[in-house]
Length: 292
Image (cartoon, rainbow, N blue to C red; front, top):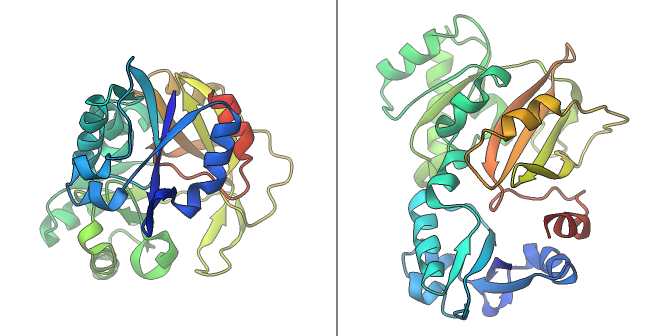
């Protein structure tokens, strides 16, 4: 099995510094690794991006561990590696299933906040969707990411029926996302979660959340999502999440879960495990040993 990491912008034969510790842990666990150029890949130069990946004689399983890719970019990476006899753990369809919230929402709907979405960024379309939440608080994100570190001005909407505020927050969100906007807009019911602290830089509220990594439907690791705040002794109830994980159309994915103030556990979102970050608190050696 081979881990595919991104190289450094300044040296194609050196790993991206943010993944250096992961590479060491992967090698210690017995994985091989190769480096690709993220910049060349996202520019569409697939052959150049993969020029230092050697073709293997027998088909080998690969896992990409790097920055987020659009489905088209992932498709290009997947096909390029196949030509070198390396097959990534998730097909392009499986990647998109967990990468875009609307694609997997129906799988997690019973345990996740009410959500709706649109690719039409018109006032009429936005108002129609937000009106479905009445005067409840909601958040806005695109199909992949929010601007949660711009909490008040580009994420949180206190009253979904206040369209002036809705428009202001959505406009700011779109402005901040810019060319990185993924597909369209998603509106989600805001849930009162168990509070931890405020983020030391952005001031956004940090709540009791965990990131669960699944491989082949089995839990690999559970990590505290935030590196700030005191989690204390928390009994994470996993049975319902494990049952849902069995139905997810992916071989390697994350499930972010959180505890509501009333004690109920919910799913915040899924993510493809190849582009999901490890929190700073994560033991990388444990992660790769368990993955192996």
